[in-house]
Length: 280
Image (cartoon, rainbow, N blue to C red; front, side):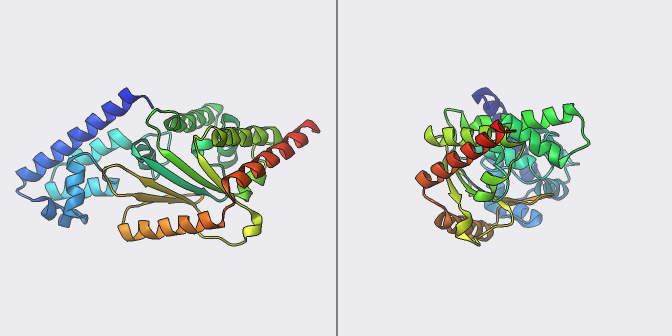
């Protein structure tokens, strides 16, 4: 995303914070007192007011209730975060990705969205939504490719990924599309845009096998975790829960191959798909 767009978005969040501070002070509440009423710490309220951290939707609603602001903070939240191209539970994650200094992902079955090619993204979208229009598919694919632009920014986050070998072997979109997808991942590894490793089948059971896991770190805010299954996702910011998620990711790292062996496995899988495509 362009720096100008990021700047405008940050300015809007700063306005959110200024309005929150003004309304809180008008109500005669300290940050701690407001935090108690909306079930977050006073420190979090301070971070919201300084635009360091963004509240979740339910917190914005509770702020409106506590300050009797007739839904203004929920409406501002929706205008800043909501994007109809993403599921409700994922829109805030997209916003946080733009602010993160480090993103660490584990993908058990599907290539992470930040690494997907257009053909792979289209195949995943159609598989999950077989009766939608071409326009719907195009919109979803475009949104996914736009998300990935953060990895091309001069200020891009460190991006770490762990893929289970399932991701390499499932022919999403067919052999030619998979060969292209794996070639793209291999190229990003060689360019050092990403630091990526693979957990092979031989590793057996591993931590967090059933769900995608994403960890995000920031310059001036605590880390958060996000987990996702087929039909929903959950953003986690409780420090104790995030710590457990980070430990799970550390265990996944231990189970993975070295970057060099991972790259060799990816390139081998790409060649297998290429040969398969040439014979069909």
